[in-house]
Length: 230
Image (cartoon, rainbow, N blue to C red; front, top):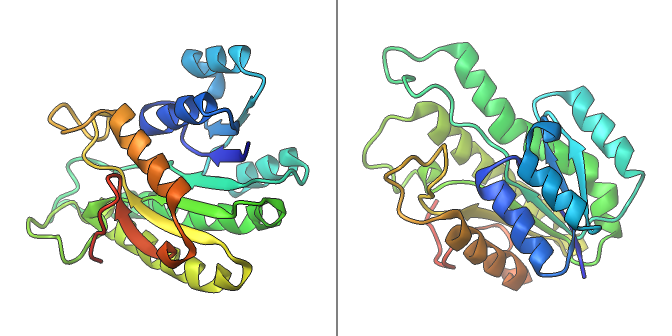
C-alpha cells in the first residue's frame, strides 16, 4: 500500500485518479479548491477510510502552505500533479492578454513545481518517490503543426522543462519524475470530440507511473506508454 497525493480531483481525470487508486487499495490525499462542492468526492470519502480530502487553491501561496501544514509531515509515496487550466478559448493571435497568460503559467507551471518543492520533505519520507506531472502533447514543440493555443502550449512546454530539471536534480535521491500525456480525453477541457474516456486514460497513466523505472525519469510519455518527442 502506498500513499498518493493528487491535485485537481474535483472532476475529470483527477477524480478518476482518486477512484482507481482507491480501488487498488492505496491511501489517497485528494485536493481541489472547493471539495465541499464535489458530492462525488464527499461520497468517496464517506465510503473509504483510506481517502483524505483537503482544500487547495493551487494558485495561492497561502493555500499551498496551509495544505503542507495540514499534512503534518506525513509521508507521500506518489505525487500526481494533475490540476491545470486551459485559459480563455478565444486567446488567439491578435487577442492575447497578459493577465490570462500569467494565470495559465501560474497554475500549469509555477504552482505545481512550487508545491512539489514544498512537499519534498514528505516525499523524502516515502518509499516510492514518484512524481508525475500531467502535461499534454500540446506542449511538444516538434508536434506543433497547427499553431494557436498559445497559453496552453507554452505552459505545458515550460512544464516539461521543469520536469526535466526536477528529474536531474532529484536523481541522486532515486526519485522518478515523469511528464505524462493523458491523451485527448472526454472532459470539460477535452471537449465532446475527444477520443478516449477518463477511465481509459487514467488506467494507462497509472500503468506508466507505477511501472516506470529510474531510466524513465525525465521522459515525456503518453498514457499508452509510447514516448513523445519534446
